[in-house]
Length: 154
Image (cartoon, rainbow, N blue to C red; front, side, top):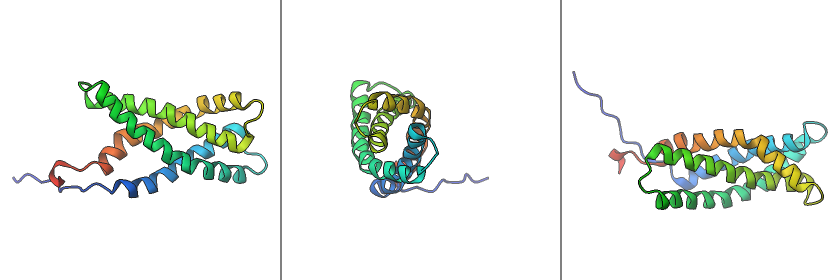
């Protein structure tokens, strides 16, 4: 019996991956946060579009922050095993992303007037579960599978 070999998998170019993945995440999170902030009534689609457009540049800035976060965790905890490090990074990343995206969407739907902090905090708390799912998928599935080369392709 011969043993099957797993073909080498080249990673997707990180820039191409981010150009595809970030708008998808921005669409999901901006829609959720717009719903949390304003509900489905009235011109929800227009508010969602405005929140989405506001979220896109914020996502790219947040991506840079998350890259630094990963390096910082590795530097501060070099002996930490891979899975616990991925989980810690995912939880912190979700908190950062939800805070930033909620601020951007809340700003686009309500402005910086009275009540901004309360509306923003409510959006962060209510959208954090979705952010955790997205962050865990990114850290445990997408990044290792599509953005990291297999040993045979290096």
